[in-house]
Amino acid sequence: MRQFSEGFATHIASGATTLCWCWRITRADGVVLGFTDHDLALAFEGEVFAPAHGLDGSETVERTGAQVQTSEVMGVLHAESITENDIVLGRYDGARVESWRVNWRQVDERALIGVDTIGEIVREDGVFRAELRSGQHALNRRKGRLYHHLCDARLGDGRCGIDLSAPAWTAEASVVAVTDPFTAEVAGLEEFDDGWFALGHVRWAGGRRDGIEDGVLRHAGATLGFSRPVGEWLVPGDGLEVFAGCDKQFATCRTKFGNGVNFQGFPHIPGNDFILRYPTDSDRLDGGVLVR
Image 1 (spheres, one colour):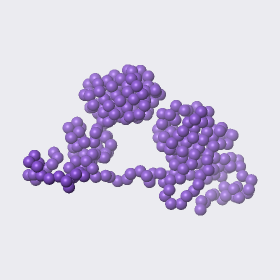
Image 2 (cartoon, one colour; image 1 turned 45 degrees about the vertical axis):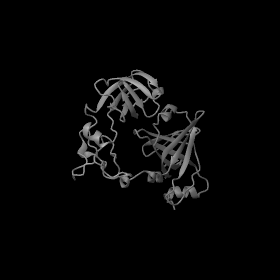
Image 3 (cartoon, helix red, strand yellow; image 1 turned 90 degrees about the vertical axis):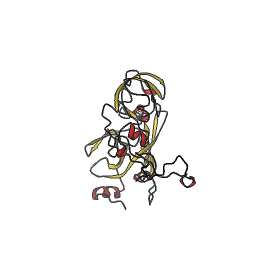
């Protein structure tokens, strides 16, 4: 059973409550926003919760066990702090949302009802509806490692060990032209071989996608092909930082990055067809290492 402070519990038991909802949203980029369905701004814990006219929270059904609980918050895009562009660009994807029940006459009487993560966001005629996923959603994420041929480290992370800030692995570029929603021509990659940045990523440094990272699927000369539509948000002159890509193969780790000692896959683990194979004249059966 949820326990409230004595003052808040007394206020609820009085039968004549002055309660409202407050939401504190913390985006992945560190931006923190506060909103309330009350008609005046409220402040507590160092945050000002601005009135969000038309903002409304749905009913939430509490369940036992490890089931993911979902609810919704719906409202009109009326404030400059929450813009449709930011929602479309994904700046609120995965954001942390704290839901508070507050006595607006005495904000010290309040309770944190839930901490959720923003999931799917739907926009219709200027109204947005954001799905709030409970903490149990994190249980759906894969934990631990899988034994397979490919490396399961992210290029540049602690297990990989490659310093992506080194000149060999990154380049500063700028948009020259937008070919289609998934493709752009850029300047600044002339010194790199075709495919060097394929399966890598970019971090935008200006324009409407400033600070957002996007995956790169193709790199051919001055052409970059992205994993999701970006063309609508780009204009010539937008800056970007491009990072080298890795296809997770041992040969790539060894030859392209000289980092075979840190390879986090199992390149010589038997495949699914191992039991069906038989020795051939081309097999090396001298007991030597299979991967150098």
